[in-house]
Amino acid sequence: MTEEKLDKATDWLMQADGILITAGAGMGVDSGLPDFRGNHGFWREYPALEHLGFSFREMANPERFEEAPELAWGFYGHRLQLYRDTVPHEGFQILRAWAGRMSRGAFVFTSNVDGQFQKAGFAENRVHEVHGTIHQLQCISACQQLTWPADGFNPVVNRETSRLDNAPPRCPHCGRLARPNILMFWDATWVEQRADLQEARLRAWLASVPRPVVVELGAGKALPTVRRFSERHARHRLIRINLREWVTAQQDGLGFEGGALSTLQALDAALKEAGWSD
Image (cartoon, rainbow, N blue to C red):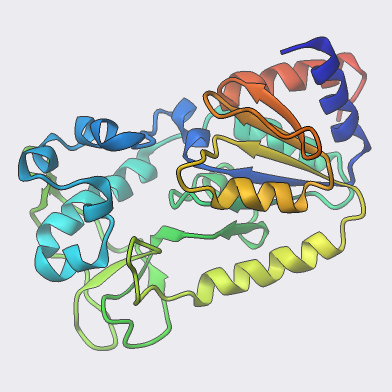
């Protein structure tokens, strides 16, 4: 991390009137969350699924709920409980503090389904979860374009078999199996209504911010949704933070090689040294 890069990034943050935070799976690693990088990372978390021969893409598939609901809900039920139990790392609060110094605050665009930004205190109406959220449920057949909170479902998962041991949730409208409101691979039944409303709020916010800065965290190239969104809206002021895929085109902005938490802490220290405080 060169002084020149650090100075330029801090200048952008201090001059901005709004911060667009874009985040991929790498944002949660410092909180102890897995990013499922490659099948070996996935199987390390779910060894029973390696034994059964299922990849991440095969598990993150609506067909699995049709063919093996107890296995599908074993996988997603474990993740739901994991996200409920996880405490967001300090980097989330650093971002909130930066946003508090800007007249238009912050908006979050994330491919993560874990709800960690809301848990860290970001307003629900300032988050766009482009792939949905595990904390909302929907009907497996999308009998209605509605979702509902997963709060009442407490999964009991057998970690040796990766299967759900208690009853899975059901659709309150038709009685069929419920699934997470997450955009899965080869997914024709994802209920988009909630995500569409979030997107509309994000578009309105973007139109109201003359001098935005984009801070991208842990967004990889394998599924480049977040990276492309960052570049499209950066207006040449993108601060990309990534442990492995940090390289950034000069016309887009700056790339910082490192984890989300340590890099945010370094930037925050530089901002304080420059006199930017609450």
